Image (cartoon, rainbow, N blue to C red; front, side, top):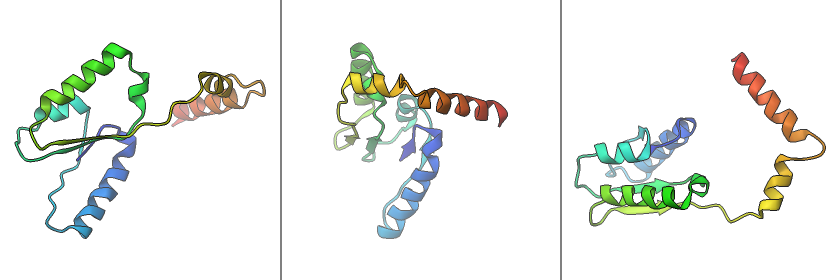
Length: 120
């Protein structure tokens, strides 16, 4: 098991502990890195379960999506499993309205976030 997003590392570490408690004979290795590079570095023919739990694939262009999926496929062996998590498709108008709200709440939130990042 590896975690693509550093911010989610704690989630995967607790998930690893949970799996080992429930299934002691299960061997789980947690890694935190970029997907394709990590998959390519795993020189094993043991069965892998590859999780892609983020919806960021929706931010890829069509060609980027095809390349990403092909790159994952190249790292897989018979018996490996790929699990994808997708968000439901949202109305673009709703998304735009949430980012361009007239009340300025989103702008204030983003400004506060940037201020905090710079401060910390």
